[in-house]
Image (cartoon, rainbow, N blue to C red):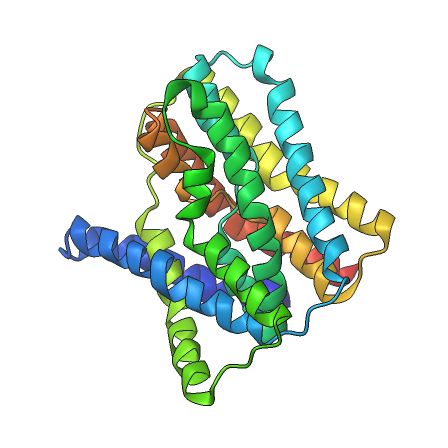
Length: 300
């Protein structure tokens, strides 16, 4: 109960974003602009500031390895079900990414709430390492239906670029002047609240899935919100992951699907309607499942 109450303000921001999008006549251009501001400016500043201030060590290797194992397991489960799901190839390719892609905005917000700057840094490292992996798999599956280059996607992904730049900066032993650090800190403070509002504004549960669509959507949701955390839990315990890194990798595995999955599906002529539904459903279910996972970890 205490864990759920701790996360309540963050989930309340998501619901507020949903309400504001529908009750205030701000226009789609406002929310589109807000999402771009968060994605290209505020969250990269948050990641860069947190990672450059955190001493790096080989202790992060098991964290990233566990995250990669959980994501690979979810991909495999999705692929194994392909012959059984009554979906067209393009629809499966579009929804496939919903089984493993993760919402960095929610992840960083929860990590900050539970572990402060150390949690942000750990989640930033893990998210930065998994972004290339997730994009490679998602674009590869959709590649036959579009002309998007995997490397072009990575080269313009601000979360990946900011994480990579912060790692180089940190490893180079470069410092940050106090005024610059304060500037980045202010941007980071705005990132979480505005990012969660943008997540809520993007929620969309309308659209006919059909009987076959409902079965497939249910399977992908189970893989993302149940199977992927269980895989992460098994791997983390096997290799002895503890402390903040254990908490962060479990949060990572239990996160809802990223809204960028819809953007990719649309850009590559995929099944954007069903992907949008899956993202919204996983976000709403995640408001319940994520606190339950964290509460169970605290109790264990």
